[in-house]
Amino acid sequence: MYILAVAVILICVFITGTYIWILYLKYRQRILWNELYALMKTKFASVANLLFTLKEIYNKEPELYKMTSSCVGSFILSKTPAEAAAAHVQAQAALNILDESIKKYPLASESDGYILFKSEMMKTDEKIGFASKFYDESVINFNNIIKRAPFAAVAAIFGIKAKGNLKLD
Image 1 (cartoon, rainbow, N blue to C red):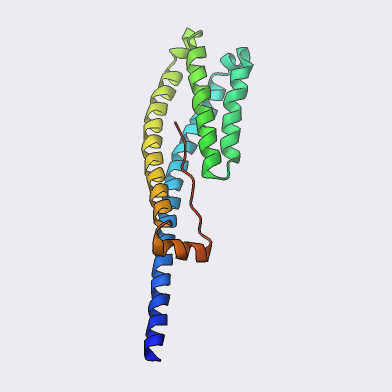
Image 2 (image 1 turned 30 degrees about the vertical axis):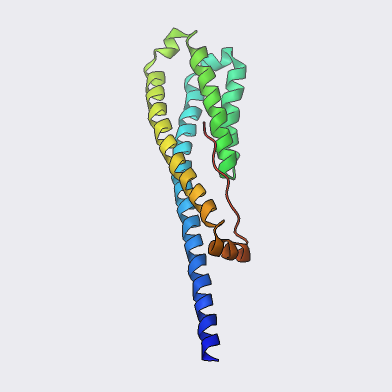
């Protein structure tokens, strides 16, 4: 009888410990996502400011304005990491087109505001790259752990599912 009680207690302790470890990994993921999201938010705030700074160019090229403002709107409305990542990729495409388009306007492309914007974007993109790498590594680690034998059973009991990676490239 005592052996059965000890076995039940040990199983409960094991399940509880495993569940706490899974929760820790999810919490770590959330912290890394919050850091990445804050960096993306900084980038999108800069892009939104750029919309106001380069009004005259956007008046001449309304499609570029629509594309840029659309990605800012998509980011603001994003509710999941995947949606935010998609908005980030869309913003990067819009900024690449802007880089090509702004060459037609030497006054704008050589302005202090645009040069500062470009240098800030390079720094922010580098930080976003590192943060997304750490986030993706934590997602891969989490997904690998909940597929393994004891963790898979506990994850199934509590309905914990694997997460998807970001694709910011």
